[in-house]
Image (cartoon, rainbow, N blue to C red):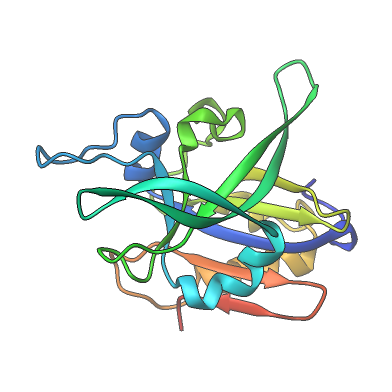
Length: 198
């Protein structure tokens, strides 16, 4: 999957931080105030919306608690594809939720611990100077394949398609606040792009 950007329609990406790993393990409650959602959050929701609607093209209704009351909300729906340990292609409905009143700029992929493609055994070690990205790669056939990638592999010439590597490295190397995770996308079908750095 790393080579051959010609088959890739678009990529949505976010940096994986320690809190994200705890969410996959269903251990995400970092304080004793409750909560502990099992989701991957994507800030800059409005800027990411063009690629979100391509990757999650259907609308579905889900019940969610808002201000202590259960209400029905619209969510974006698609499918994730991945290979299991025996090489079989797996697929499962995926959902991208719109921001809440509490987090007005963050959309999210809910229940990440329920997807084999997000298993922590698939996450590279990473470390200082070697950040980990979650890539949601949509192929020209519309299928969306989640992958984890190490920053250092993007810097090895020939390991990745040069257009893809340049796009991801450009955003990784952009200036941003120290506590801000890398988020962005690139649409190869219409040259749409976003990076939350400068």
